[in-house]
Length: 400
View 1 (cartoon, one colour):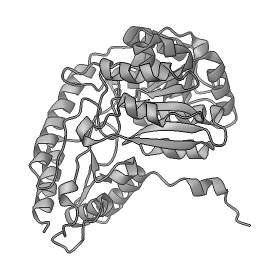
View 2 (tube, one colour):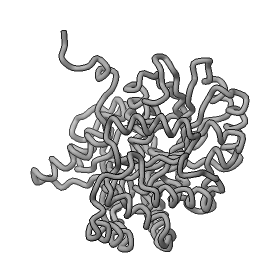
View 3 (cartoon, one colour):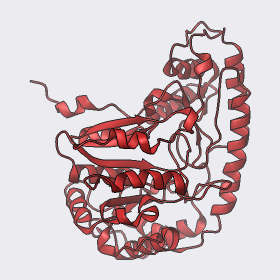
């Protein structure tokens, strides 16, 4: 009889964390490494938000709070949903967790029974399928393609729904592709969901404010009000507000679901960090003036990376609508051998050889459910991106 839970055999460690850790180890050993794996902005949390956290510490707001969020933060979240998404929620319909990941996990733990299916468009964030598996459910990947700019179609969604489907998990703009669904594209999906009342919608809107050019963000319950009573709208302060380490995610949805998620959290982590919650109040209620200039910087970086990667032999890199990732195809590199003698037979060997031979750390596409690709996070300096892309170009030029 083994000591560890058999449930752990169903899941694997996060590949993005593994790549970031490997890059840090090589850098510590003296290697010249450029890490393009981490999904977090490289700039600091805005000063007004930091000041709110400091003020919370100085005023003694360092005790336990309500299990799933202080009243002030829940009110701020309700105001945010009304202001940005025209969605009306009460504080009883809101939950706050230790990052968006916990909120998603709580929802799965509160709702999934053995054999329940969760439809997940691929490419997907690496944690989605494993969270479903840990909760006893079955992830059902629906593969998008380069030809559809990594967005699934209504016909694909319709075909994936079965009597066992409990959730449709939706993410736009997407990690890892940056693809964003327009109102019309999302309406086609919600029309399908309206025909299947047993399917609930879990939407991960973490990159909402990282939307570029003419792309306008929208969320399912906003596009189709008929889904309001079976939608959990998840968001957080990590990405747009550069607060990844503060660990605050939140969601709003039907009160019975929120109550069940609160029960899960009460017997696991209990409340999120009190100081982080007060900082998040300021993030949501305070000035949003920094969002536009930050987005301008991300657009510049996106265009730099897309142009340079498309100039690399064997790589095709579409231009995404949001987030801070690109997801280039390396179909033209498969079957070739690197200058150091490594056969590139899949995207994992490509990423491994790229790191070992050039010091550029990326995450291979199989981790996100669609190959042959790799993910680049362009949330780093222009100079680092130029150097990294130059190394990628030279690596591809050396393939034969």
